[in-house]
Image 1 (tube, helix red, strand yellow):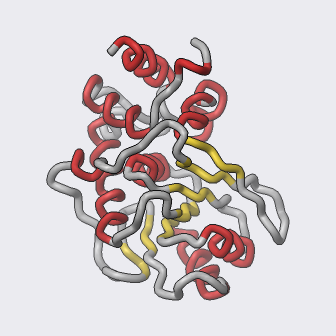
Image 2 (spheres, helix red, strand yellow):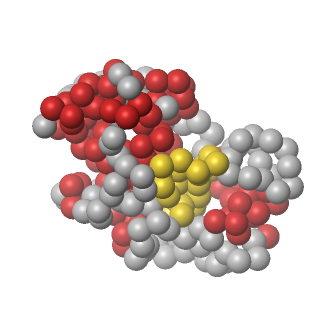
Length: 225
């Protein structure tokens, strides 16, 4: 398959996968019986619902500070499918490095794995441009640890598809990746929806566990429609 045939957004991949293979395992690292494409869609929509409730706008950036857990995948899709941009921060970055990234990107919300939430909280306090009551939540269980709704859990929307109504094109930005280099001034690499999917065969499965064959089949199906 040529690179030019992969003209999809991450929302396309998510919705088409859930439609065609609702009960099929979606993530290589997850328990197959638990993490189907239907489950992935529901989890992603829960994140999208929160961001929309926060009145975020298309193109707003959301920091994600994971420790390679499965929940990172649903958060990425929840961010990108609703038109926002995920800013991925390596788990071993110091609070100072994280704060620089938050400032650089003017992030509007932040997600962390449980053990890294204190790191994110410290980074927010060190930031010069970031609001001190920045909305924060845990990837593990969708528990809100900062900002509006602090101390509560995110619910699941009644109709997941209503969370994904923003107009998207393959060349919209979806993801900013920060390599795990020890530097005081981290530099991120921008990826469009199309670039993430185009590079899937070599990177996406390794980094977030998505079933690559499904992406290839979806690309072929989209061209035939």
